[in-house]
Amino acid sequence: MEPNRTVERPARRLPLWVAVALSLALVGPTLAMSGNGQGIIGTVGKAVPLVFLIGLVGVALIGYGFVRLTRRLNHAGSVYALVGVTVGPRSGFFAGWAMLGAYVGFAIGLAGLVSDFTNAFFVELNNGPKGAIQISWLVVAIVAVALVALIAAIDTKMIGKILIVIEGIGILGMVVLVIVIFAKGGAKSTGVDFSAFSLPDGVGFSGVVTGVVAAFLSWAGFEACAALGEETDNPRRNIPRALAGTLALTGVLFVVVMFAQTIGFGTDTKGLTAFQTSSNTLGQLGKQYIDRPFGIVMIFAGVISAFACLLASATTAGRLLFAFARDGFGPARLAKLDGPSKSPRDATWVVLAFVLVVNIVVWASGWPKMGTGIPSLDAYFLFATAGAVSLMLAYLMAEVAAVVFTVAARFRETRAGEGGRILGVVLPTIGFAVILIVLWYNVKDQKHPWTSPAYIGLGWAAIGLIGALLATTAVARMRRSLAQELGITVDSPSSATPEPVGS
Image (cartoon, rainbow, N blue to C red; front, side):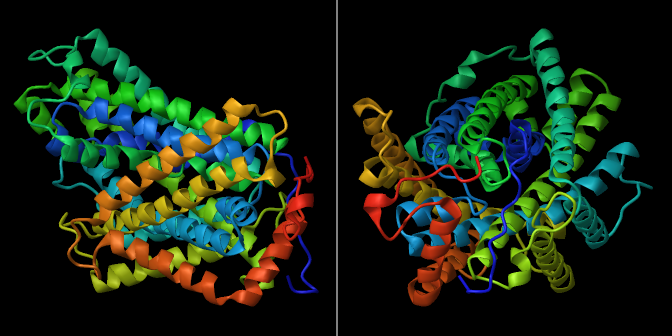
């Protein structure tokens, strides 16, 4: 760290529910349930709820690693610090860089998705495209980014309230819809068909894994609350609870809602085709099983859920950028806390400026072409998928960190028995294998590296890897900075017992 660069830490004043709100908003339950099931039907047929159940098991393995780490270590840089302290500063920089790219990629894509959902809402409100209000997607993206910039300048607790209200509307609507679908017995042709939890004939391992990959990515961003580790009250208790709570809530919700949607459309060929071709499953089923106004509300819930995801992505990316800058990897100005809540406002604004510039370039160039025929939706699929691949690499490093944390004497948990230590090695190791499978199935069929979202995500991570290998002086500074910020003597393992910094 530069000799004249002071370390600023946010006050620990955020309650547990704010941490849950951030993770919940980044997962985006309403958004995920409106559009993530359609792409799975082609590979697993009616077994959509089954692959979501398998995906939940996989993401829970990763969540266990994060829970184990955040019981002792909390930092605004999330995996940047969790990996940096346990595995080493070079690995930490690589992991943090990959996660930063993920959240920035999500934010870029979500600005376009807010635009697409907004125009789709106007079409539905008009009961058809003829005469419906349609706004240039760039204009909507600019307005959305500007609103996020304004909200980012206010109190962090207020941001949490906004996020929890937005996602709460969507979740409440989904619960009502699920109850009605079950009460009416699902589609008349097939009813409540529990065979959706078994594989149809002809679906092999490759099809299951392909489907699970798509389901697995629905939970991307569940760990966002780890970036609030320096702002949350009693983080060693509340951050793990927020992580576990987010996974438990979304896990049950996703499996149940996907089952309800599958039987709602019907498990026969006609029903699955309707499911697969639906542009917004919650809105369509809402109109079919309740009434048109309810369907419109569910489509609007998708709009605001996409906006909440954008807000959560930018907020989390801003905290990662703040953590980098505080350790000398960026301008000193970005390491400052501003506003009444003393949050990294300027770092978040830099992220949003970058998001806006990229969206302007995409709009002006007409790139990318992802096959949807809708420019804003093409941008979403490219950048969100690239971000998800980059995030998988950050998860991969977090699993390594969880194993090192368990076996290293300097991090030994005195209250953890032998059984706990065995789980601390076995479960993250299985999670590591799951992530490798997910990555492989994301890249194995890609033929055009320059336009492939998977290769763009890998390319971003490769830049971070090169930087980590070459920046010897900066890495040494990072080691000292993390030691100061976490109260750990990183250079002297024997005395590296974490101290409760500000908790």
